[in-house]
Length: 332
Ligand code: UT7
Image (cartoon, rainbow, N blue to C red; front, side, top):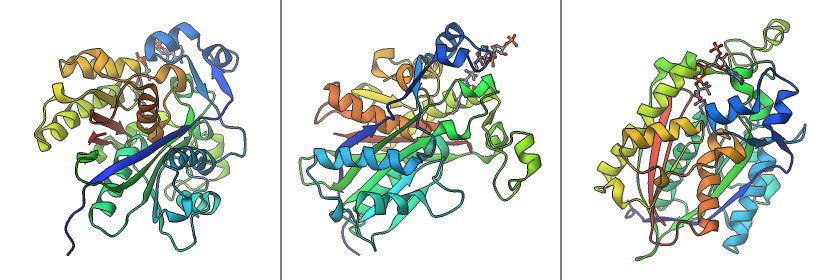
């Protein structure tokens, strides 16, 4: 067996569709108001893909940006991982194979979707890390991409105001001595929370029918308060677990990039961990919840802004439907 390789994030990219939907726009289609959405969630606007645009298209744009930054030819990608809960098609072809074709990655290169809802980014990053660390692959593309607006019930104000569309991407490669490095992860799942956040229709239990359509079972349903409580506990626990695993302290971390589901969840996690609020990224105001894309968009944004730089420790932490949870600790 070959020796395990250190793995770095060579480059990151993000893409959101140009069309913006503000809270005021939402007031026109559902019984809600800007003040409620801002104060209860922190969201001010979200980006919305045009009809007919799938998650693969957003993912390809984000990937191109990441690869351009590294001046890296898509022809040299040797594995594609796409985290998404809104694949182009239920059930196949998988979105990663569509990305392969559209991005110009050669046929033959493996392409796999990762399904862990909002935790998909960290699950995919973990998987990509292992692929490179094993020595089996050298240039792994990790994408988190969502067209959340395709699975919203626009009559349900409890959920439709929360989500937006977008994608983030990263290129993983072996790291030389002294370069940045992915240090470790924590992953978890608790299926007992499955009913609290789901899309009930369209799968093998409730195949699409006139009845599922009439009952609007193809949109997200959520017990918000219970999900909120799980989210705070899961993200605080996961943060502590990955730090312990890597033998590091929260104070060592320059920035924590949490899943962006609600600004009040981020606030509660910071209080639970007794860490300053400024140590946590919040960009939910601009994007809403883009599920598997939030932390990848966030990482690309803070690198671009110079808020984090080479040598800094950043911690991605997520939770999502399943329930699932996870955290990754990275030295840039
Ligand atoms: O990525 C994971 C996915 N989701 C999440 O993580 C979300 C987790 N949960 C949450 O973020 C929060 O629970 C919500 C934002 C979903 C809801 O906030 P809340 O403070 O828990 O509100 P609530 O559900 O207790 O509702 C409070 C009130 C209710 O009215 P009454 O019963 O007090 O008269 C709701 O009907 O707010 C009402 N309400 C709204 N009002 C205006 C709920 N949604 C809306 C809305 N606009 N969009």
